[in-house]
Image: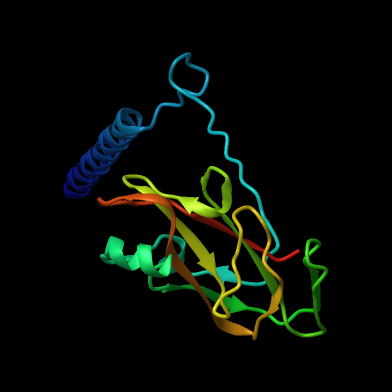
Length: 206
């Protein structure tokens, strides 16, 4: 008799455990259905396509960000100085090139015929671009005053006309600094005031 009661008790325990397992399994399945992400790929208005494009160019050097966007302050200049000398004080600015790699190069300025050649050093030319003064295409036009233009020159004083390539120069590997100058130049009857100009430049490696 005692054995029969124990057997029925064991049955109830097993049935209770099985029932609890079924309830938990159903709850877990319902939860997974409740929080399962819905695939809306085939639903109109719920999906799209992102088109990505770009370009990869070969360059032996990288232009430093501090050189890509910079401001050059020419300060104040008296009209009397321009009347007497015809130009103001040249103000330097630098273009930093980083991570220059060793490579063979042969770069030519087709206008001057000058060629830079090396088996290990890269070479570069630079071209400045800006609106120019009418009838004075070598000088940059300024906004705000009359009778004034800007000249961009090399450290040796050679004028770099707008839109034309400079002579090529070899660069050491690693980091390199190129220096140029901006000079205010009198080109006509002076009208004083604040002035500004925007000059772009392009580095040419081939």
